[in-house]
Length: 154
Image (cartoon, rainbow, N blue to C red; front, side, top):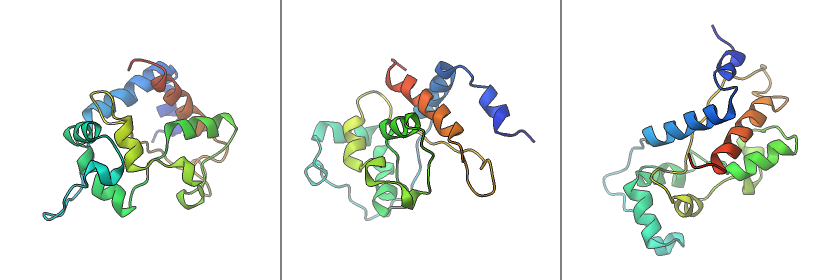
C-alpha cells in the first residue's frame, strides 16, 4: 500500500498538481439529491448578480446548493488556506475553524467567472492517529498548488 509520500511524488511540480486540480474541476460535478419540490433561490435573496447566478447554475452549481444550504458541506476559501499555510498553521477540525475560512454560496456564485465551477475536493489519509496533518506539510503543499492555480491561466 502506498503512503502519502507516494502520491505527493506524482506532483512535485506545483504546476502539475495545479493542472491536475484544474482538470478535475472541469471533469467533475458534485451530485446532490434535490427534492422534487425544491425551488432555487432567486439572485436577489442571495445578494448576487442574476447573470452570475444563471451561469453558476448552468455549470452545475445548482446541484451544490441544497448540500451547502443543509450545512452538510462547507467549502474553505483558497485564499484563507494559502494565508493560513504561509503563517505556519495546520488545519483543525471544521468546528474549530474561523468563520472567515469558509465561503458562502454568494461567494461561490460571484467567483464563477470561467467555464467551470470554483470548487475542488481534496482527500488524503491521516498522517497520525491523532491528526491528519500535524505539521501542516499537506496544507503547505496544497496552498502552494492553489497559489499557482489562482495566479495562472489554468
